[in-house]
Amino acid sequence: MTKQNEPAHYAVSVVGKDRTGIVAGIAEVLFRLGCNIADSSCTMLAGEFAMILIVSHAKPFSKTHLHEELKGVCDSLGMSLGVRTLHADEITRQETEGEICMISVYGADQPGIVYRVTRELAALEVNITDLNTKLIGTPEQPVYVMMLEAALPPGQTPEGVEGLLDNLKKELNVEIGVRTVTPVSL
Image (tube, rainbow, N blue to C red):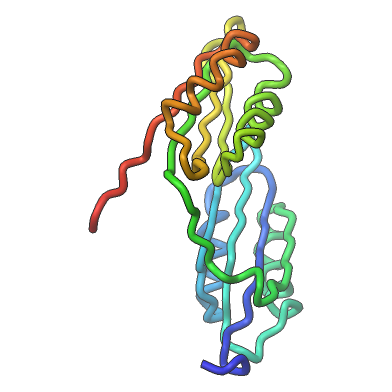
């Protein structure tokens, strides 16, 4: 495939108050335009809904056209919209190297949990590929939950990382678990 025949790629972000029909509205516009959704992530944060999509479309196609078509549905849903053109070096799918693991953190809600845990993981050269947090429990006894998907550097094991986080567990008074994500063959 020559560069001239390669599709155009865009990062699309949509954020606003959660309501029914956001994903369907955005997906309908992308379908009608003939766009392909290569990657996506959608989540509700408090009462806000956030979507990030990587979409492609055969050239010629413009960021302006994509933005104009999505703006109508976003305006009708009260959502903010961002569209960014991706360059060739930004669209190469990069497989994560290293063993994939899930890291869970549970404890009393307090400032600094995300910072302290991610700082320690960065110091261990652990690559965080996904992170989610939420409060569970009651208003009187909120429990902070953080789930991370991460790739371990060569030579590091889930048990080793968990052991290296022992001091942080005591300092923050949280539980931290690290387990391997077992790949499933299709």
